[in-house]
Length: 67
Image 1: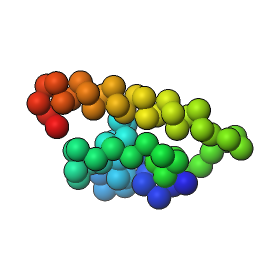
Image 2: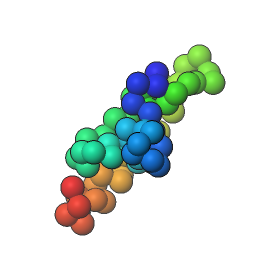
Image 3: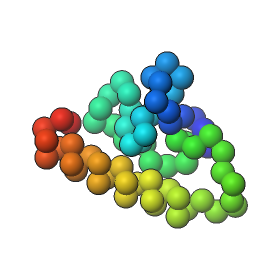
């Protein structure tokens, strides 16, 4: 966990709020590395939710021709 931090500032984080890399817009990271810590012993549902959210965003961006 925490290897690919999510945040708004590219200087202090690798991913934006959509789990998309700041530096490479066609790369999304949706595993546990985007979270710096976990509050439960089994965060699998959170990972699935992050993935579904990122995919929805990626599809909308692809339809717009942004990625």
